[in-house]
Length: 222
Image 1 (cartoon, rainbow, N blue to C red):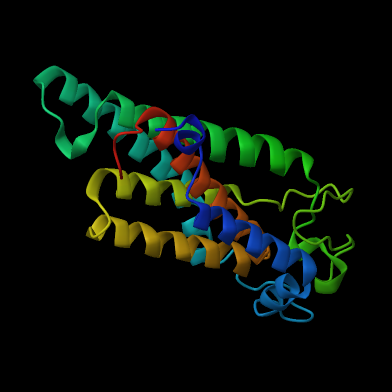
Image 2: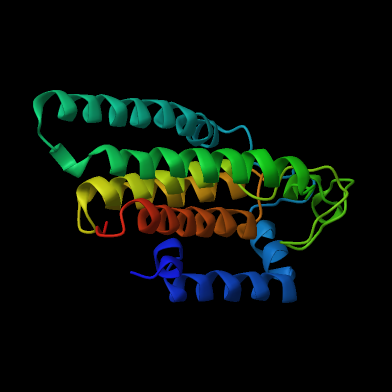
């Protein structure tokens, strides 16, 4: 298999990401329109601080610890018994943990959120704040941490874990998809992220997962 094919991701995935990025840059009002669905003049974003919003906010790091501890323990058990339950061998574990470290960890939380500067919806002038709105993918001097969403990147990672271990038609994958959609909804409803922040994180996780799989497991699909 050619090296560039091993290290890449499906062309249609790149096309989808670039098309979405160009659309959101060309029409930044898309972000404002979606954010406005959750905004109430004089109130702000009423979902912020609500019980359900806090539930999803705090559930993400808890699930990250539980799921990854479970992955390591399952791999250790497979090594001890000589079995390969859920197909979790060393290479698959390396793909999953590598994805977690590189995309939600270093790329999203370490690089983009810390240095991109995009203001959160609740902080921009359009929604009662004092900072300037900046379209997606354009670096900003507003000192915000909106781009992109760390919580959504982590939830998207759970989709990849479910897909890698249980397959494309499993209930676990369906549950991960629903959970991720609810995390996206909760972060937007709280005024913490724009739609483009969430979509970018999801695309980055998908692209990273495919690149790592093709690099470390070129002879194996999800």
